[in-house]
Amino acid sequence: RKYTYDYLIVGSGLFGSTFAQIMNGNGKKCLVIDKRGHTGGNIYTKEENDIKIHWYGAHIFHTDNEEVWHYINKFTKFNNYINSPLAYSEGKLYNLPFNMNTFNKLWNVNTPEEAKHKIQEQCSKYKDISQPANLEEQALKLCGDDIYYTFIKEYTEKQWGRPANQLPASIIKRIPFRLTYNNNYFNDPYQGIPKDGYTALTNNLLKDIHVQTYTNYFDNIPYFQSIAEKILFTGCIDEYFEYKFGRLDYRSLKFKHIYLDTDNYQGNAVINYNEAKYPFTRIIEHKHFEFGKQPSTIITKEYPQKYTPSDEPYYPINDEKNLKCFNKYKALAEKNSHVIFGGRLGQYAYFDMDDTIASAISLTQKELSI
Ligand code: UDP
Figure 1 (tube, helix red, strand yellow):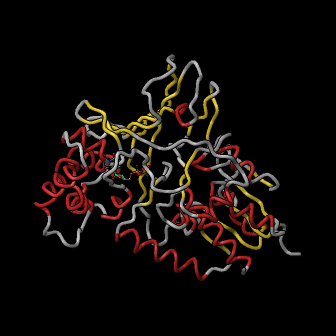
Figure 2: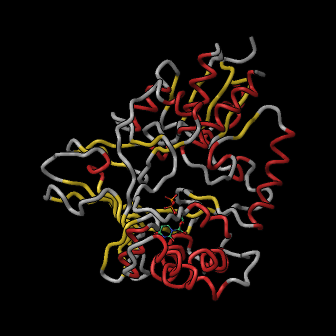
């Protein structure tokens, strides 16, 4: 046997961990390496003061995919947390996603009929936009001036670091909009937070697998290329190919974790700060993800950042220029049978956790030819 491992998996995030779990279960020998000192990638939760901190940003699991839900429930139980974020703008708190509670507070309307009428009135100015060319046009066409200027424009521009009329319309399709008094952010039938945290979840996925942290693929490429028949790479695809077609853009984030001597800081897990005058997009109070009763609390402010090569990449920027560049890397990857790419960074896709698992499952099926 020429190789020590069937698969070297670079990156122990949700994609790598899911892939490793399934391949290992099918008799494939896997080694998972991660440059960080812990597994789990960006879903990692760190426990301090008995509170699980979503260390790289809040993660709320939600899905409508039966197969994914069935699969992941083998590795964790979920609590019954329902995401109901608030938006802080002009000194007031509004419910998200945009629903009757929001419209009631914004326009003082009580019935869906009144709200519908108000939205139509707001949108009538933009009815000539048939094919929204960018996020601004898409948002104005969908919700008109009040909602766009109160909740979307400034938040989006600080989140993405560019004018909203230079962003793809696709980003805003993620925001649900409804005419009921329902503050559940997601429409999916399954939702919750892993009961013992995301770290326990990825540890369970990786339970029987050889894992090495503090291990950077790029520190010894020839060695890592030589030990496994195939590599699953879940880092940035442009970095893997030494940026030969140029650098892909990402959006980065910085997190400020703050320990407070109060048992309840903001009364909700997630509050968005929609105005540009706040440099952060949201404040997370972690204990509320788990209905925590601890005597103190931990909050995290999330600051969007320009991405430079020394930063962590968080969001791919799926505009035309970057997708063109990504497609070149993808074509090159397809010619190389020794390496496969997966996950948000490997596939340059704005995946939610359920998409990540679905994509990893589908890759294992391809690899196992079932
Ligand atoms: N968004 C917004 N105002 C809000 C929340 C979201 O304008 O209060 C827009 C913004 O463009 C953002 C997109 O909706 O990038 C998706 O937001 P979401 O919070 O769903 O995504 P996440 O950043 O958590 O992946």
